[in-house]
Length: 105
Length: 130
Image 1 (tube, helix red, strand yellow):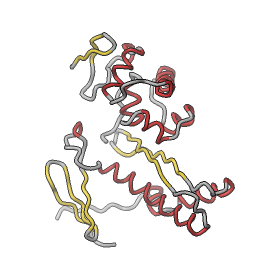
Image 2: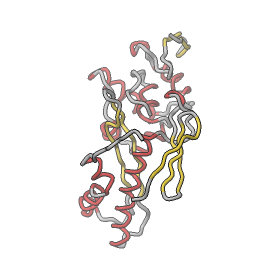
Image 3: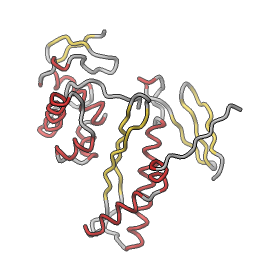
Image 4: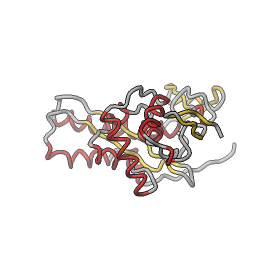
């Protein structure tokens, strides 16, 4: 499995750059993961999304539905994509250290 | 409706022709394509978003709501086993002069668009090898 340095640690990643062990995640890892998604700096709004995703995942062992993410963070769908250009699944979930979402698009 | 044809361009990219209008579809690089055009599932999402926007815009035009345009932001949620589109998440933007008491009517208009109805009432799909 490929390894790459995030937050000063060598971590296992899959072919799409998702870290393999959610336990490896911390805010420094998130900041480096964000750069792979074209997000150079994580703002307060980015963190609001990331922390919501992470808290939900740790509680339910799955990512929330997109509508739930929007409702709970107060962001419109377009605003989520403005924050994470690859979207809530491939972008925000990756930065939050969640497993790669299902699907092929 | 007129015949829709699909012909290979290169790799996994295909060109779709509808009444002389052409557009392409491809897969992402991670799924074996070249990402030269939207993936088929994204085209389905685009069709749904366009259909809803057209219906709601027509309603707003008829009612004289002109302070802004109708717009749609749409995300496609994917599912596995089997691989499929598992859901659509849609934010609908309305002209600013649409009163809030009309939102229920507009939701019904959006849900009556032909693509929404098609997804809600899955069509027969008849494939033959020719």
